[in-house]
Image 1 (spheres, rainbow, N blue to C red):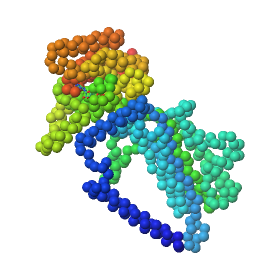
Image 2: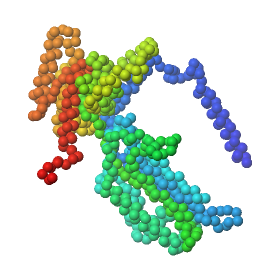
Image 3: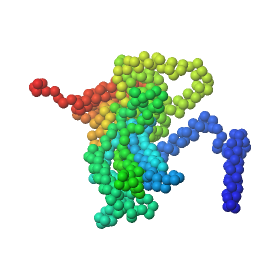
Image 4: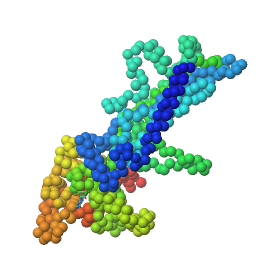
Length: 574
Ligand SMILES: Nc1nc2c(ncn2[C@@H]2O[C@H](COP(=O)(O)OP(=O)(O)OP(=O)(O)O)[C@@H](O)[C@H]2O)c(=O)[nH]1
Ligand SMILES: [Mg+2]
């Protein structure tokens, strides 16, 4: 009793303390005790803070040598374990020997995988996944709750492969893992262990159970069903999982004949590991010959699989260039500012590849590509936007829908569309993980065409170009053969003041670059196109889009010819 009072007192003290602490944390913002760090920042200070944060992030990422852009991952998945069955008997007044009433266990939780368009790298995807276990059955016929499914979200464009037996990176499956500790034991001991793992006995009845014929029969049945489960698992090995998650699953919907008002079914994606089978409660073993079964079974382990995840970005064209060449600016200009790629004057602004869609109309114009539109650094644009907002310029502005009406007419004429990927900057010796490394090039391996972006205002764009080509070759021999064009960006910086001498020098520089490309970079069958442009001021973008469209069309045609789903039609056979 004394002890209870002390506990009660303590509780009062803690609740008072809690009350006090909530009051003090809600102090008014003008209170002199407020931490100066919590003061609201002015927009300029906020901008500065953001820039500082982004720079620190870049530095951190550079120190990792690009290894934080994960496009390859080995994932170990374990589905949930099934819940154990329960041994219980019903108890009621005037009924001393009630019927068996132990509930079954719950099924172990499954593990599913689904593509998510909001993710861009595999770094947020866990490498070890465990499903939720099913709950145990309980007395009074209460079945255990099934384990909730785990849904793994991976970026759109992820390829999932199950590792098969014999692959050193694969971990044991559930049956192998269960047997491993007992390999050294003799037959009787193994049988004994198996029994311990599979059965739940009514307290003190274990020895009695094992001598009964009903138990032996149940054991034999269990053994047979287990053999079938093992065989089914082995069959699964023969057809390992292979998924190409490059399409979003259709919207979550009801079945067409479902009654109105029923909630929509949540999309779970594809099943990768199913949860373990649950154990049976003792009523399952009830029969005329065994009216009072004092045993139940335990749940099984869930499936264990090892998956290899690889992220392939689904871009038709990949931009390759040194840091600060203007790749992100170009992507934004080509997509009318829709692709959200950060642009800033410091190197390695882009940390992960970003994909944008270029939509081309019949007359060669493309959505958003007005001549002379300016795509400045992202923070400058944000600042300008904020100033407009504060000046009230948006008060009478058209809404987004009204504004896009004029664009809609253009979109109606859209005849071709392709995707283009902006990449982090590539520098010399990226293959030794300098800068951001070059692991991001893996996602470019399958793109139909590569485009070099160089800074024409730099001292020697040709050296930059040679370095880019060498790095591509170091990453994968033959990769540079996929390059089709050189974009000489920042042409606006040359001869901009109209001085004829400057203009002449700029022309000479471009001619020298073209000469270099023709003599040193072309392969036997084709010479790369060289196009001067200014991504920032949207100059000469139409011809770039036209050329890109031609490359993509050619490559799509070639690949559809090589992988035709229809066998060649032979008229002689008719
Ligand atoms: N004058 C001029 N400046 C440009 C042009 N294109 C880009 N810039 C500027 O060059 C700087 C770098 O541009 P980004 O687009 O971030 O370059 P990036 O190649 O994506 O750089 P990383 O992401 O760091 O590899 C920014 O300050 C841009 O405003 C251009 O055509 N003309
Ligand atoms: Mg960039």
